[in-house]
Every structure is written in C-alpha cells, then in structure tokens.
Length: 621
Image (cartoon, rainbow, N blue to C red):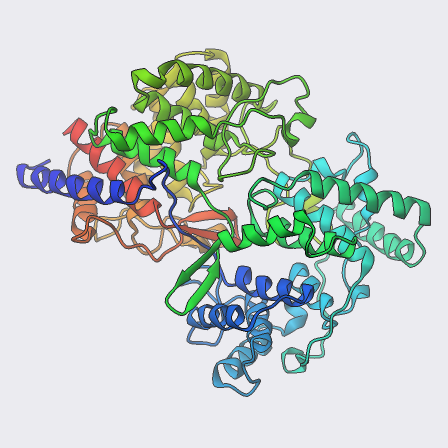
C-alpha cells in the first residue's frame, strides 16, 4: 500500500470510528434500521383493518411510505433496484386502496397495468392470496389446505411442525388456526381491475413425493368440509397454547413480522380480546418496530441489535480502539446481559443440551441462533476487560458447549436448528414463498469454525466443519451465501475462517477462491452482487459495487495475504466512497432473509464491514 493511500486509510478509519461510536445507544448497543419491502407495511394496515383498529393517521403515513417505494413501471420490487414483483405490487395496491387512494389515481392505474401484464392477481403467491381471502377477495376453497391438526403430529412423524424451520413453524401454526376459521372482513372496494380471469397455474410436481403431497392436499380439502369435531377442538386448543407460549417479552413472535401478525389474527379468532395482555403486548411491540421519518411510517420486519453490536465491537477492535474505551466496555456488558439462558425450541432435538448463546433481536429467547452466538463470542474475546472477564469466560464456555451441541450430523451448522433438512416441507402446495427448512450453510459454519479457531478448542468438531465447507465450495471456487448477498458474502466469510483455522492460504482450493474474487472485482475497484443471483446464475458476482460487499471481498483477500493493485483498488473504493461524516451510503440490499424471495438492507452493514476491512488492511500493510 502506498504512503498516500495509507494516510487516506488512517483518516477514513478515524472518521468512520467516530461515526460508529456516535451511533451507539446509551445502554451500550447498536441497531441499524432494517429495511425490507412494502409488504410489511401493507400487511400491517390489513392486520389493523381486520382487527378493527386501523387509525386514519397511521394509514396516511404508511401509505406515504408505500407510495415512495413505487417503481417507474408502476410496480413494487422486493429489493432496491430489483424487478417488479406481482405479489408485492398487489399487496401494496390493496393497502393504498384501503388508505383511501382512488382507483383511478395515476399511480394505482400504473400498478394495475403492471399486475395485468404479469399475470394478474391469479399469479400471486399463496401468502398474498391468504391475505386477500381474509377480506373476501379470494376464495378459501382455492387455497392449499392447512388443517390445525398438524400440531398433533408426533415429532417423529413426517411433516410435524418441527420438520419446518423455526420461522416457518411459527408462521404455520397460527395460519392453520386462521384457515380453520375461514374468516372474511368486507372491504368497501373490490379489485376486479387486477384480475385476468384466467385460472391460476399451479406448479406441477416432478417427483413422486411432490405428486403425493398434491394428492394429500386434495384429501385434506375434503376433510376440511367435515373435520372430526373432537379432533379439531383439541388441535385448536393446542395450537392456541403453542402460540401464546412463544410470545416474546417484547410482544413479538420470534422477533419477526410474519408469525407476529398471523399470531395476532389467530388469537383474536380464538377469543382473545384486544385488551388481553397478550394482544396489548403485541400491539406495543409493533409500535416499537415502527420507523417514523418525516411524514412516513414504516415497519421493520425484524431488529438486529445483538448482531449489530457484536459486529460493531469487532470493527472497532479491528480499527485499534482499545478494549477499555467506554463504548466497548458498555457494549460488552450489554452483550453479556443478553445471553439466553433458557431452553427454546432447539431443545426438541437436543433434549439434554444445556442452554447458552445469543439471539439476533432484543427479545427472542425461544430462538437463539448459532450465527449470532459465534459472532458474540468473537466480540467478547476481542473486547472483554478485566472487570467482566470472569463473566465473559463463563458465558463463552456456555456458548461453546451449546454451539458444539448444535452441530449437524453432516458436520455443518445451521442457524437455529439441528438436522432440519427434510425436503418434504418444501414440496407442500402452500410453500411457494421463502425457505421453510434450516439446513447447514457455509456462512454460519464458517463463523463457528472461526470461533473454535479463536478458542483453540474442539479440534475434531472444527475439522468436521472445515470438511463440510470444502464440500460446499462451488465449482468456480466461491461459496453460496445463505444469509447475505450472495457468493461475495459466502466467500468473504468462509475464506477468513479457514485461514484462521490454519488452512494454508496456498491451498489450491483457497487459490481458486482468491481467483474468483479477483475475477469479479469491478472497474471502480469495488465488488457487488445483485440479489437476482439467487435465481439467475448470470448475476453471480455481478451488480453495483457496494461498501459492504467490497469489504467482504477485501476481508477474504487480506486473510489470504493478498497484496498489490487489486487490494489497493478495493481499499481506494472504500476510502473514495466514504462520506465526509465518516459513513457510507448503501441503498442496495446486501442481506438475505429467504434466497430468491425476501431481502434485507441492514443499515449498519455499510459502516461495520468497511471499518473491519480498513482496519485489517493496516495490520498487513
């Protein structure tokens, strides 16, 4: 690195560190805003309309946000700069009609034209049709069967609720209650202008299991006409208890929007009044997830304080901030207080495993996750001071034991569950949106490998994880990114972990990863990968350069000991795109909720990862 560039890097770090510390809450945590798409906001309005509590001012402010996200072609996309999505557009359209926008308004006419061009309301996904059915805009008979009796299946039975990922099971259980009630609330308008009149085209399964599940759906529809009364009553009671037992302290379910809104509707249908403590907490939680800016209001699908705080701590330490700095002292104390010490749903498959670890959110004790736990351990190892050393050591030991117990039988690690790999849930007719199982992923496994390398323990488990990572490497040398976009994320996290675990940077497999990264650097010196890469391989490694993705690529190259023009150009991109206030701008979404379907813009990614890369570049300069 040249002397002028080194000077620029030092100045960028100073500005960036100052900006990051200024973002910290007084209690010690960081939390960037988490943006998704307008279905969160549309469904919030529909929820409140269904429950009879939609307030005009809230509808007005939410509608203003939804309108601000409409594309030039009249559609709404699932991520910044992405193509229009028919389901998202239909939900936005209905929400705006609900807020009072006239059907002949130009922006709604443009939206209706887009919906017509892309197959009409008949081309929407099942979950959009589910919302339409709540208001008599779609027939319950034309939705896949979702009987609540599924909650009665034993845990060894195929398609029991624990065959689904935690986020899916939390959504499915209340949905079965709602589907059994088949409620309808009438709206003062119809949406005939969105219909083509064509029959929906159902996907034709190509496997025996898929065809069998389609047949099962038909049989369940027949059962729904005359369910066994005693069995139905038992199932509804169990489902209701299951839902209530999983409400978190902040009023949410799983700390995420989908199970939250469906649980509120289900409990309302089961007789829970709006003044019931469970419902009061739920509404208060939604208010806490609301972001107000100017005349707009939007809803975060989730909040990420534990994740953000751990990453911020690592970034500050990488930039040379002393562990005794008040910001780091406050952060480590807050992280230690957030440790999850109770047994959650993960214990269904690990009955004798003691709890320990961290969740993603402020309150999600039922679902700590391996990814956050590994990152928090790394943060605590980097930043714990003498006054909390004993507490940190004990918490890290509990986390280490829990993470080891969560290793899957194939050697990898998933986010929330163990061996949650049955393919049957993916084949169900109503599972046409989002991932519904939680198999091991390269990014989560890499974080655990890096954690174990840092701890210097459990070599056998770490080696199994490394072998899993080698088996997951793509033919081109990259790794798929489950929780971030996409191959740049996967590769940017796997490579540093392998090097930390002692893999020789000259290992041919790491050489291939290096070559992949170098081949996908853009002319401006940065890296970027469009979220369309999850569906279209032509987009892999291609897209507008972003600060976070450039940082991921640099973290991998720096770990490999790469020097020279490519790294200098990448660092130059970060320095050159930093704003005067020490922050970076990043409207593009680089986080992943469900590959191919649901994406996230973590507002803190644009700050913490560039600082990590710039800080580590000084270490190897």
